[in-house]
Amino acid sequence: KIPLQTMLIAQPPSHNRTCLHWAAWGNASLSLLRALVIGNPEALIRKDKPDKGNRTPSKIYRRYYYPGECERADDKEGTSTKEKLNFLESSTKRWIQHRLRLAIHGAVVLYFREQSLTPFDKNDRKRVKIKPRPWYIMSILGYFLQRKMQPLLLLTLSFVGQDAKVHGKKRKRKAIR
Image (cartoon, helix red, strand yellow):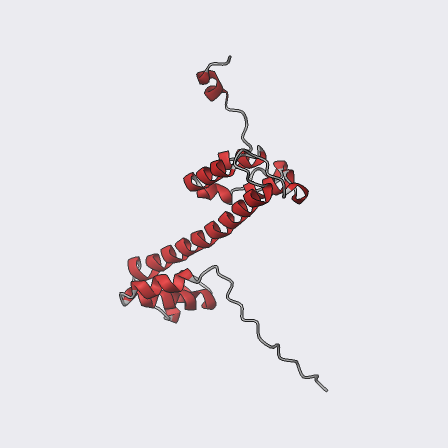
């Protein structure tokens, strides 16, 4: 039996993998995957080393527990591999959207509250070197922020990362003669 201290000191190479990577690779139970995601959601998007596959936990799980085995229950909870894969993929998608919202909100606060830039001002945009389209979106959010419209700012941010495509009739292009 190896003493615990020796195991902790040994530190085998992790190849940039987190506990969630190892749990996905080892086909851990859904309850353990949930606990690891709650504890460190950033691990959902972290990739291991490029020479080791450059994979996220959901890609590791997909590779080692392929769709052919998705229907059978494979743990004590009776959870199928398909349920686990769906959990990892949906958690990853939600975390990316949440992280994007946080980054945009942070940028808006930085530019329009801390640096006191003026929304829609062309000179301010050029000074901070932001292209016109992102500046326009940030200006709208900055306008809400400066006018103390926090609920409207947060509501607008809630749409970031969502699929906002409208499927309508496509216009036909006229042939040039």
